[in-house]
Length: 372
Image 1 (cartoon, one colour):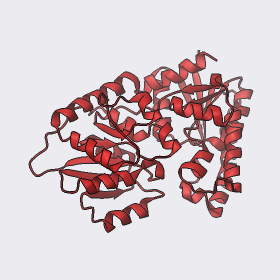
Image 2: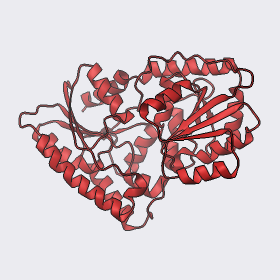
Image 3: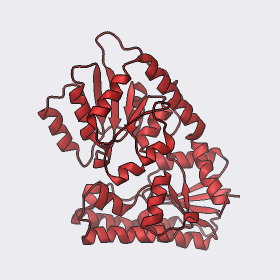
Image 4: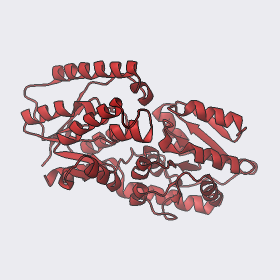
């Protein structure tokens, strides 16, 4: 039985994946010891530059030193979990787990190579930077006793790409922290007032914002207001497109706090997932979808291999083809009907409560550990 877990590495404790698992483990009575040394605050684009890569390398060295200083000789744990982001610390985690006779769990969330050379296209697929990312991935996926994936589609990718045996993989959904204010209800559309459609992200190609802006163009004369939050790789290009096309029905908030993201999600009439056409986009269910479910908001997202593992079109979400602005616009028109918004919002909240709360998510991890 797993009674004590050492959460270890350069993970971000407020990032939803980590926050949900840590909270869930504690709710289930597991003692969670946190050993953490954060990396420098760098975007993916900055990491792909020579200066950014040098800062990252220095940060990784410093993290090892700081984590070594935090280690206690009498530390007792049943499992060491290397949280996200943590690829560079997995070998060190292996050493700690071996010293403590504990199982090593790695929660990658993504492959570095897939992110930098695939989805984001920040480095050339055949170049040395991509080779370096692949080497880090190779070590990070080889050392653990158990690797977590958010969907079976993602698990199958890890299995094929890194030659992992299926017994070393466990699918644990990302989930979300609860929203006590959530009711699953919907407000009536007041005369002259638009519905608020909310999407947020770090604006990489995965998000498929081109489809969202195409839908906004098609709906510019209809009662919809699009609110976009966050900053990232494509921010400048997106802001320029909004201005160039005169999309006055699109509001750009920029970067906001996690608390503000939750508030905007709760206040929205409709929440959007991702619509990118990449292989990675087809494998994942993003944080924003889990947040919308936890807040009892109607969700519209791309109908992919990953999303269909969790969502059922027309039952608890609306699923549309990826990269298709016209299909997205049609789905949003469907949600002009108040009863449809109420029905999908209630179904979204029911799905969250049934499968995606912190203790339910953490329970999946514990169940996987018990089978080892």
